[in-house]
Image (cartoon, rainbow, N blue to C red; front, side):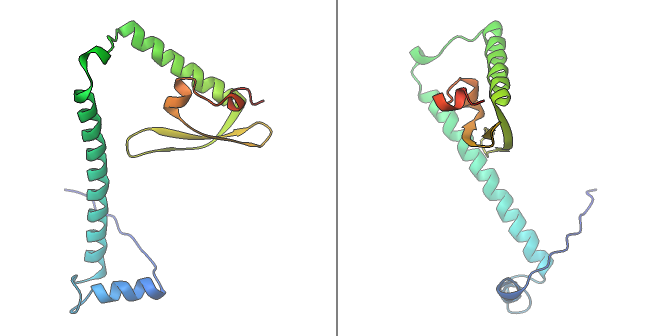
Length: 142
């Protein structure tokens, strides 16, 4: 049996009026809770659909890649790439303060970097950092 969660939401003005038009005998929903559950389910489905479409596009791109472009990956090579990625992230963190990070729907981590002097360095994806693709002025920020 699933535990339920109670949410208390305060809405005023135009949002309250909009909900009122969609709830009750003239609306599509019996009550505000039913309407809220519907909106959450719809949002969840949209997020899942975006994630699925992203995955589907990646798989299609992988299958469309010619066999000659595939690279043999060994355990040792993979461990080395992981080590290089961690080292690149450590270098970026030592020259910049990572102020915020967020994960996209595709799972890629974006980092917002600020230099030690408080200047905005830029935003980099984890992949760009791992591959050492920082812009020249972002590599040597002190």
